[in-house]
Length: 207
Image (cartoon, rainbow, N blue to C red; front, side):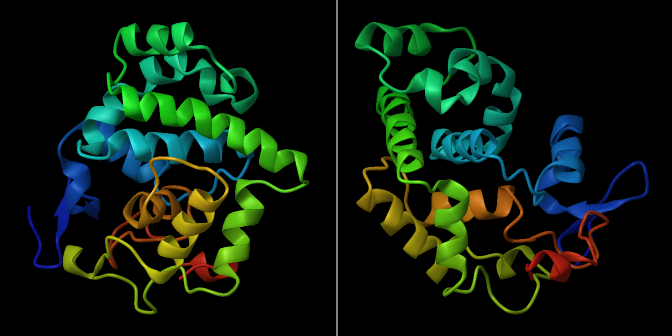
């Protein structure tokens, strides 16, 4: 059943955001992962990398291939990916189930090295993100009620993308950066009324 607020009622009777209704896998991701808070560096790197891989594609494609992508990209471990040779980039491109976009794959391998260099300075993705959000609102003040209320980018995501590019990060722009903020829970863009929207988000410093 479709609702005027862009919520969709599933067979289990739960209301979900409009994008989560296409497959069981999408619904599970929506319910259990999206807008949650994996804050360890490997997980943050994986999510930012997956959002880069999604550019120009649907998230459903990336989600369906996530297991294969994790295998091809060595678990998205920055330590294992950094400094991979051209031959190893070819291996990633040829791996079953991967996304065969040379620019994206090369960028992710390079970004792993950038993250290692960032760690050497005593900081990381989490600290960089939190520093941006300390002075820039992560999202509009009002929680979204319709899909039209969910922005593609914000001042914070624009600044985050700028800072990442400044240290050498590739394939990241304001839209990719905002999708990353949504995915890892610095923003809760579950629509009002969605069963997965948590009432305690304010306690996490989120809207």
